[in-house]
Image 1: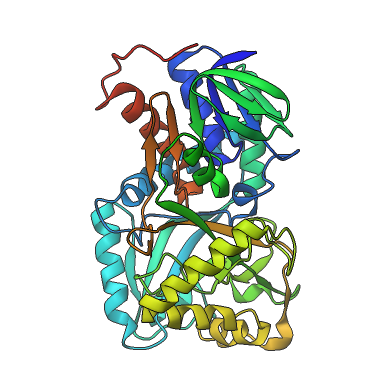
Image 2 (image 1 turned 180 degrees about the vertical axis):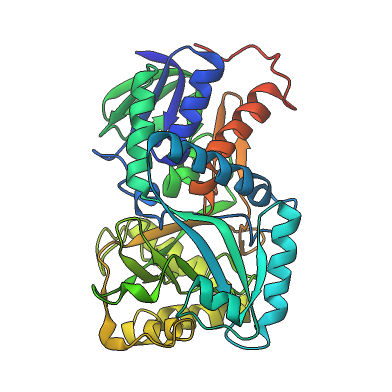
Length: 405
């Protein structure tokens, strides 16, 4: 059994790249995933927020692909009848944050995002219960969708164009032309590694990226109880600490009417450690403890962030943080939200720091998507085009011969 293209990982990145490969080259494309269903991990557990391109340094891949990805995904959702909740405000908690807010506006405009500075009166018209100090940033093109619904439509698209998607197939080993899996050996002409939290392990099999290790961070949410959802119309975010890739505790209204608060960014004990002691693997636990300890030892800012995030594991601590955004919120209005996510963030062991931008490595006949973190869901359609254009067509001229068996 063999295919022109073998994609490992049936998340949003794997599916969109598979569709773009099929569109560009035709041929045989197979996507494998170790789970028995779609969206079991990062793609299906993310917030569903289509980010507008506000936070990212101009010139980075995140900045370049977020705005176009947002537009493409909004168009895709409209075409498929997937509804969303539009609009987002970023509010300040104190006067010191106004400077960072203006830096976010500057970044957003440089990236081509549609944003507007609003005063307290204008904020009340957009989000009546939100509070800010002097100014806030409004983003009309931030949209919340149901990620599982998007994944289901992409899976339908893959089947319609002849892409084979095989669930319950785990990759065990690789050589130059063959993958050893739990379903037997699968031949391939070109491999796309879109395995999310385990993408580093697969790259290592190919002798690539051995200075990188994936570190998991657990995202836990609370929710606003039924009857109090009126406090949030769409999305209310704080001004983040832009030295880190996390956005702070915020409010998100889903298309189903649920208002979430969170998430945390707590170091998880393993890459699929959704519960307290669930799915802990010894090798991953050692990595998490070792590399987080190295960051704590060398970066005092990381220490402060770490203790702050761990504190948010206590619901009342998270509530107090969220209440600064919406003062009318009371502790009796909140409860636990059941869905927990894991953010797999790449760690560079040589620099002893988290990798902030997307990272893609290329082998002789393979591509490895190593740091597909937020806003990867937003960027996915544009990201897939970027990967295919750059790695198969060079600078964008479509003159290369397609790789095959």
